[in-house]
Amino acid sequence: MRWAVAVSAVLLALFTSGCGLIGGSSGGVQAGDCLKKTGEDGFDKVSCSGADAGFVVLDRAGSGQAHERCVDVAGTEYVYTDKGKGSVCVGIKGADPAHAANAAQKGDCLTDTAGNNPLKADCADHTAVYRVLDRLDTTEFMPDAACKKVSGTQTTYSYILKAKKGIGAFGTGIVFCLIAKGSDPARTIDNAKIGDCLKKSGADDVEITACSSPDAEYKILSSQLDTSLCDRVSGSIATYSYQQPGEIMPKAFCLGSAH
Image 1 (cartoon, one colour):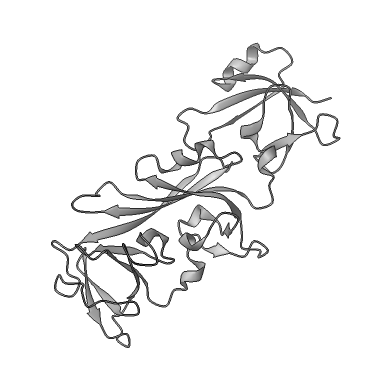
Image 2: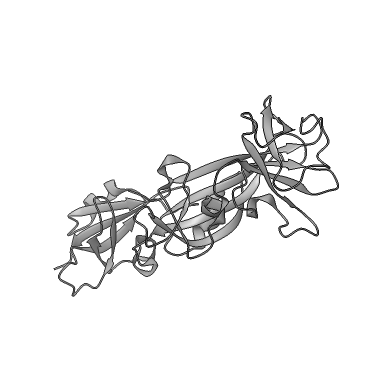
């Protein structure tokens, strides 16, 4: 089932102290400049025609810039914090920032998150799997918790800025609250209550439907902490459990026949 699958795109925020972007000075780096990775934490400016130019400066973020944070600059993969001058937002050379996951806004669609590298996609395209219900600020600790109150959320995708050194080592970023692109958020299982009826919507998923509908298969008889407790519920013929993003414990429904 798709519920509560939280995937993190971990981005490295590199601080000027001890990092090698142009010998430790990033003042001369501007959008469009090319970089090569040096060691674990550093970058050096190189010619964009060079074979070692694997990265590009997408923009600067901070006070007076178009974006306050690099996480909002489409395509950012690495962040270099330039003391007193904001941040340098670095992406992969040759990649299309317009299709980067962090370019997606509420109502946009993403490709499958299972591969840990989803892209923004046209919702009409066959590669689009999930629709963004909301895009929220989050932290590295329980990043999907922010989606707990977003009705209809079936899974999450976290795009986290992670600092390796200094203040901010506990990374912050954004989390996408997602639903299968063809699903109705009002009919997802997190909105179900005792007495509602369910129909199958996939191999392992169900959704709410009218009890008078011919496709109604089950009726919710009881809600329990564990499916094993449904053995004591009269009329129970099946069980369904799910874990809402941000919740620690799963929820179990005891199901009877809808007709």
